Length: 280
Image 1 (cartoon, helix red, strand yellow):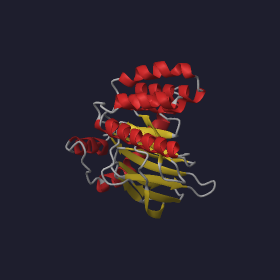
Image 2 (cartoon, rainbow, N blue to C red):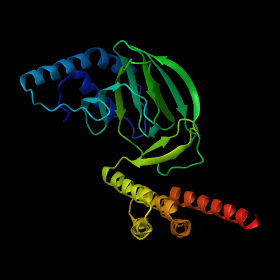
Image 3 (spheres, rainbow, N blue to C red):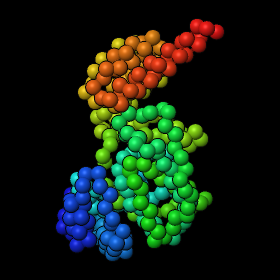
Image 4 (tube, rainbow, N blue to C red):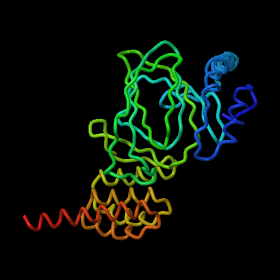
């Protein structure tokens, strides 16, 4: 949906965000309330009239039941219909404002990442910490700091909630997935569609388990995107330990600092495991 000057509140939002620093965290509480109370009903009614006039009009509802109301290159504003808990806790580096709409109440858990966690490469040693548990209902506002926070909605049985969500542009390229029981990362997806497809290919090849995939995966170790390179070495590790050690050796001088450090840590662990096995 191309943003048009259709409402003064949306125009005001775009101006406020245009003045913001790239990684800034503006105070939008007053404007966000006005958007929820005035703009959202106005926009929903406009969309309903559009559908009535054109039954084939395309509505921007995604797979996760997200209705886009406005956007430009700095933000997206929409309604999320939350009716299930995702399998994993997810983190991607963007600031998000939430506001409860409708009549349902949910429990919200806010988790914190260790201070200074970098988004670029998944670190298996990281563990989330539960910061607070609270209720979240109509009219309540909650802000997620994309540098450190993960928000998890726990619904009442058969009581979906509607959430107004303002998301600022990403300042990190990966979406991490955390296991709910261990609170440790289990993987990540690239938010670039092409890179995401390549990392999915690498993962699929590793699960199929044919050793003939090692050679093309080794070619992916020189891909210009560091997330693809790291996905390739992880996939190789699922197929063949010796090949994985060779791949990690190649990445030990990778141009990306997080890849270098992660490769060095894994090589160190492999040496410790190998030494322990030899002494057994």
